[in-house]
Structures are given as structure tokens and as C-alpha cells.
Length: 391
Image (cartoon, rainbow, N blue to C red; front, side, top):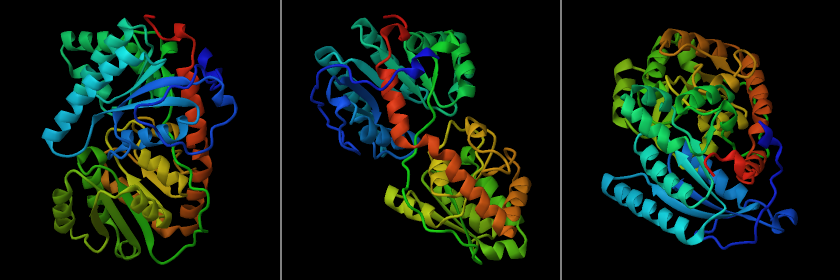
């Protein structure tokens, strides 16, 4: 794609953001010349899940190159406050579009109602001549789109087609272009970023092999397959493995599954961790297990690899572009607890292989580090207007 080589140049005079973002590093002299004003619409940086993590990186690392105006349209918690945040946020974003006229709008999109509310804002931006980036995160977007009736697919296409789609991997560019009816060259692949832990202690092979599962508890993330796989481990492997499963969603159901499978000696179930707690857990872990049935590019995998943790994953979403079986991790089939148990057994039994995979995992994920990601994103924001259809 021609615009990938565009340098992350600043574009217009500074404009004060209504909600200032904290920069991670000092503003460079180049970025102080002319700066983009960018309206960013999506979840709070502290929101649970991958999009919240991406938003956190965006706020910290692009604020050195552009002026960000942040509008929250999604929050965790009870339905009432969440609905209020959505309505107030959409109206606020529309007001800022009309009154501020930013250089570009960046919208985080998953699926279902997220497409509708961001799509309506996109139509307003287009009418005002403001370029829009639609950052498509939904792991189940393509299946959801294909399951819509023909009129529904037409409406989604109408809402998203006029803008610049960003997807999480090269392999997703063609499927999204086909669904939206646009040239594949219009679709930019921008894998998720990862905050890079600068220093790590040397890993050693100990009697206990610490492993983690991080994500929303439910069938899609494969947590019940993981519990079953732990029950299939031999006595020696169960003695050595200590798995911490942390997340939200079906917490009580997962605890019940652990008790029913009799693996309470292996699996500790914890609720959602804040980022400091998560980082502390990853710093001590040697294996991450995420046997999902659907994914985009899960932040938990990138974060674990950056912390030199060997990932055990399924070949879904963008994961095959990141995790190479036997090189920097282990890939198992979807929905196969027996294969997952064999993979865990091999990692528990072979200390040297487990630690070597972890070293390669950290090296291979370095290109996903946040500063490089931010530069590429700002370069896209600064792309010539002809790269944004309909303007």
C-alpha cells in the first residue's frame, strides 16, 4: 500500500484537546512544527479488554505526535450507566465534529451496535468533509456480518464503506474488503501494539511451571477446554503446573467447572486484574494458554510474549501471523482438550524447550512495540485525503 511509507509528520497548528492525553515520551522537535488534530471515539483507556488496551497505548504514544480529543462511548459496568455513556458520548462526538472540525476522526469499532453508532457519526463526518478511520477490532465481525439478512449487510456496508478501514492482520484485509465491497488496497493492516517491558529477570527451570489464562471467561476464549485439558494431565504434570486463570464474564461458572473437574489443585480462578496485577502475573509466568474459537489479535498474547512467556494458542484470527508452532509457541486445534493436554504436557516436561520458545516469543513480538505502532498510525492519519474514499 502506498501510504504505509508516509512518515508520521505533524500537520497543523496545535489545538488544545478537550480531554488531554498523557504522552509517554517528550514531544520531538519535528512533531512541534505542525500537528494533526484527531477526534478519537471509543472506550476509556481503563476499559477491560483488548480495545481498552489499544486505546491506552494510543493515548500514551500518539499524543507526542498529534493533538487528541477523546470521547468515550463505551464503559464497563451496569447497563444503565453504560447506555448513558453511549448516548452522551455519541452526542458529544457529533457536537465536537461540528464545532471543532478535526483533521481526522479515529473510531474503534467492534460489531453490532458499535457499528451503528460509529457508522452514524461517520456519515456526519463525511458530510462535513472530515476523513474517518474505522478501526475494526471485532473478533466475530465477519461471522456476524455474514449472518445478517441482505438488507442488514447493505446497511453495514453503507455505514463503513466510505471510510478507511483498519484491520488487525494482513490475512483479514481481503475478507473485509470483500464484505464491504471496496478495493483491498483501501484496507490497512495494523496489528495491535504492546507496551514493551524494558527489563526482565532471567528465567530458570523450577519445579513449579507457572501458567496463565487472561481474558473474558466463556466458551469463545476456550476456558472450559482448558479446564478439561488440565483434568487430562498425568499426575506428574498436575504436580508441576500452576495455572492462574484471570478474567471477567462467567467467573462463577468457571469456578464450578474447576471444582467439577477436580482440578482445584492446578487451577486458581481469579477475577479481572488491573494492569499492574496483570504485569506482575506475566512477569512470573512461563506459559500463556488461550485456546479460543474466535479472535482478532488478542492483546493478552502479545503482552505475554513481550514478557517472555511461551504462548499456547489456536490458529484463529491473526494469531497464525504471530505464533509459529514449535518456534515461538505452540498451536493446537480449536475445541480439542486432548490436544491441548498433550501440548501442556510437552511444555511441562521439557524445561529447555519451554524456556527457548519464550525467548523466541519475546524477540518475535518486538516489532509490535507501541512506539513503532504509534508512528505508523499517525502516518495513516496524515495520509493524503484521496486515501479516504468519498472525500
